[in-house]
Image: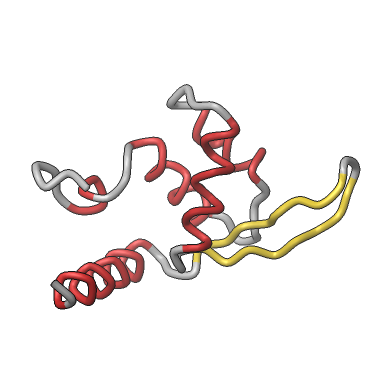
Amino acid sequence: MDITESGLRMFFKDWQIKAFEALWKSSQPLNSREVWEAVNNEISISRASIINFLEASHENGLLDRDSTTGKGGHRGLYSAKYDERGTKKYLKKIFKEHLDKL
């Protein structure tokens, strides 16, 4: 967390926000390659970083993940649980809940 920033930049790096934007804009779930391609058009980042971010975001309740099988085995299809406004609201709620535990 970076308290010198505001909005989503307090919680995420620019490339992570680009990943969310790709998911928010899509009308269907995206796999890690599709998210990586959307981010990598503007910011150079490894695919492994995208995969780890998508999984962590799923575990933290920000993304939904469905599994599909294809050439090479299983892969995740990710979609945003919330739009941008809902994501900010969710982060605010979770942040407040964790602060209240102190």
